[in-house]
Length: 397
Ligand SMILES: Cc1cc2nc3c(=O)[nH]c(=O)nc-3n(C[C@H](O)[C@H](O)[C@H](O)COP(=O)(O)OP(=O)(O)OC[C@H]3O[C@@H](n4cnc5c(N)ncnc54)[C@H](O)[C@@H]3O)c2cc1C
View 1 (cartoon, rainbow, N blue to C red):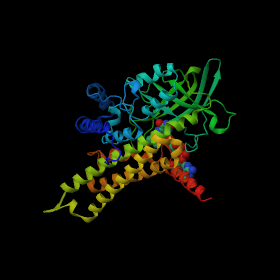
View 2: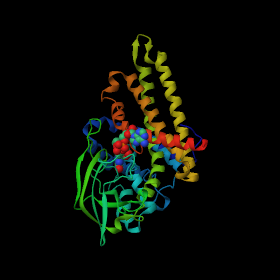
View 3: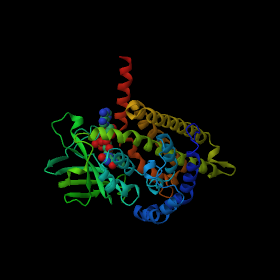
């Protein structure tokens, strides 16, 4: 942790949140094999009331909604600490995709949409999901969408096929990206529309098994179908054809949330690596920590994580000051750089733990499986690298 970006109001909150994660949330990890619903129940019944009591509910919210109006730099640092356990964000109701949907509705939702969908979301009474990607089209070029929403009278009629809709299992509504204006230029064809999941024609097909884990509830990724699914035209977010413009607003802050979460995961893995190296005896009087290769791994991971954190917080600072569109290059850079650091750290932590590292007796294998997709979602590594390189070339031309 660097104190370069700490603010006086953040310091005590950060400590309180960290203590809560260590004392109250990490112990839940021993139940991980019982599935997410089991853990979620404990969080909702026992942990969230405690979070309310401590005055720590709604860390991400605006002042008007009872939050602290934290800057992105401040919330980023909380996101790191919340990520020390895979259930930290969920416990504090700051989890993706709900936090992104909250931000979207807060900025662009109508009064009615905010009352009906955003309010219960921030109270933790319901969950939501975001359905853009489709199996038939390359998600890396999301302007190609097969899902359509046709305006007939006062309603949109939605037809389409989505997958990798994270957390759709048990969600109360989906924000669906669908083509509403097929004759517009590519980036102005789609819109975001709220679809309550009990709408006729909304079909939950399955939770996709990802790296051997189907998951459940919030911790899952679904395939969905929309078959003549009718919603009132008032469920449109913003103007028709602004779906991609709205998606851009969602992505800048979202990438800070994700990358700081990955830094938290890297810190957890490094901590486990150090503790195990100091404990594991190879011989009488000789521990793993005495081996130079292990020392080098630990030193490299420490330096990498510190560098990554500075990069991300500096990007967050620039977004706070200039807005996300002014710092696209920095956002691309952290999006591919931080997962690389996280994967290297996780891999080394697993290696140091030997057989124990690949077993499910520690959290490392869960993190490895669940975080591999970080190099694919929110823009695959290659897409961000090419975008950055093109921007660099431009400066030479
Ligand atoms: C765990 C997980 C959760 C997700 N959650 C959501 C969600 O909640 N909502 C949602 O809508 N979507 C979600 N997604 C979907 C995600 O956004 C897409 O998987 C991603 O955009 C990539 O699209 P694709 O899978 O169609 O891959 P494709 O676009 O087909 O790309 C395949 C591969 O091709 C390569 N590639 C692509 N473009 C280029 C390029 N320009 N140059 C070089 N190489 C390239 C990359 O290596 C890429 O991985 C999630 C995905 C995962 C894995």
